[in-house]
Length: 254
Image (cartoon, rainbow, N blue to C red):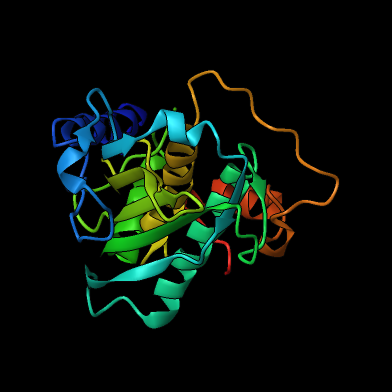
């Protein structure tokens, strides 16, 4: 193969991929976990995620402390039987980790026995499996292309999540139904069957935490003792470096 062919072939493939639907995102679910779902408003203008949400800003303005309840799989959730229990736990653990990291920049994180704290909980309602073979092939193609990753239009994973913040008296003050699937461009694959879902928990956690406060509200400074230290370091440089080398997302263990 000549040099010009080596440049042309992956470039032509990239253009073909760009002509395909850019995102495999499915609409958010409605499982009954959230109260007053009839009042949820769809967020327009989002590129990758599909989001429906509602909030009571006046009520949220009084919230200074939150308890983060463990994430769980919602009953009758849409999860393929081929996704192992271990992989499901991996995504739940990362969801807890990312929510703790993001919420701690907005509120004081306290233990569940504080009766004055608001309570946050998230449930996973759908998991879309990531195909390891397709991810590896995508990484091989991406190696030839400058400026980012491409994904073959098969085996792309995703996740749907619902979350709510309840005030100390039990009233729901904020809710979000969120869904994202891996796109054809700029979403690196993974050898893990839940690699895409695992990675997208970080995007969800940021979207939900930011939604709980007024726009432009400054982030809180972290206390000397990180309230999320049980989840490990906030920045796992070794894992990120490994992912860059192989061109694939490397999930962090629970």
